[in-house]
Length: 230
Length: 367
Image (cartoon, rainbow over all chains, first blue to last red; front, side, top):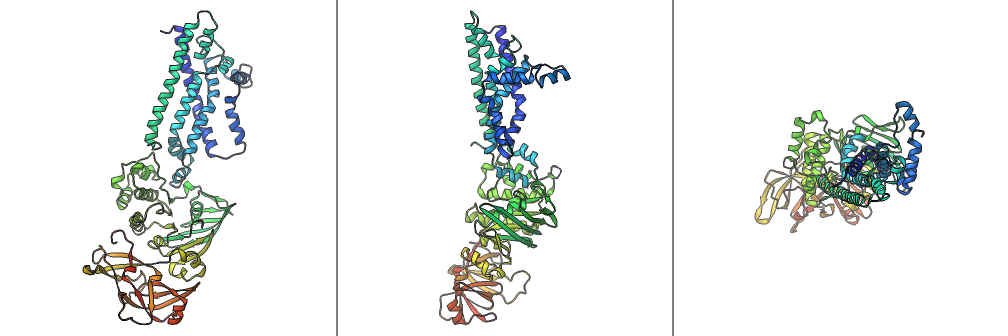
């Protein structure tokens, strides 16, 4: 059904999306908690910075990443000198680009879920001797789990579709950084590429739909277990 | 037990309370908006006072001058809130064990509390499968199991209907009598508090209005202004002496309060109770349901004519509150005009007239 190149694009996309979500999950939940529960100076600025990728052209995000993490970038050059690691134009760059683009979606979903967790229940836990970490791990996080899940799936789906930042920061190298959308774009640029492009479009649609359905089912199941939905 | 001197100001509310409570149970009474819940939050460490200090059982929990501010999770104060605040994603057992250190989870203490509060059949249930009364009982058990220095009960029964409230109070008494955990019991319902203690802290608009024994506070004009409309009442311990079933009446004997010399037994005729002969009951009589007479009255429908001595009397607005010793002290409220006509004064012997149906049972099973 799919050619070897098409399979490689699909598997690469899945791998990039998986790692991009994994990469942003812990910082995303942490930032969401800070925004939902803490008041601090510059909160508005932090909030704006996180949401910036939602409104910036993806190409700009990719270019900024290249400036920062490219071989001659201010972090990239240091990483190359220290460990000999090069990120730009590898699949890792695609994962990072996707993570930055998906981060606001994850943070938003988790933050909303955490704001819905009753602070008074957290207070009750504190009076029972639970410190901040225990309150977070046993009360706040479990009760906002549907939101964490929804945010993760959203970020995963966003990752599958990431194009602008990826092509700028990771390039379009077959088998290395040619993810589904990049592959579709490439096929549409060459003669005879209509059929493979169409097949990959179908794969994309199916994948995104599956992600959304799975997340909905899981969220309901978790919701029932933690008593937030009847 | 607890010493608190806290000052807390917000744009819309200020609290400034200084008290020292050394009885096992202290009731905090006041109308809504008096600052009761704020006081609990400050003691529990959920809010921070601007100035002052708080110590419980000799441990300083907060002292602004010395820079002490023990975080809430290290204060070891068990709080039962108005809303149960149970954890919806834990079973009943999980809720109960939340505050118990891991190494103490197999102790007999847990079984004892579960038995005392009759929680056994509920342990495997989920929180959303419980009734309101069950939830508050579990919240109480959860707080006790965290082995607190003191229990702070913030209107724990306010979300329940009257019948359920009376079902929970016996459990609170058990906690007081069997476990001897010190309690600060906050309520806007005086009769609820009086079933647990006669030591009161009266708050109004963020300030202490009075602090001490109920019967002393009743003679304090400032306290009366706060308490009066909210129902001063007489809560008396009594014992069932027998039943007059054909007449629909029971005979009760008023029990002398603990610590006072037992005088002559005083009997009251009251509505028929289902409580067995010999069993204790708690009764309530409103002060304005007690009439006073200089001597016994002949040919009158009122069943109870009890002679007693006036202990104290206090004028408040156009009324006179008269405290009379009927084996236990009782407050009667009459008009100033009547008081003058009868020449009521401390030391005078007087007859109290109480209709049998002015006597209400407030225990769960005897009504």
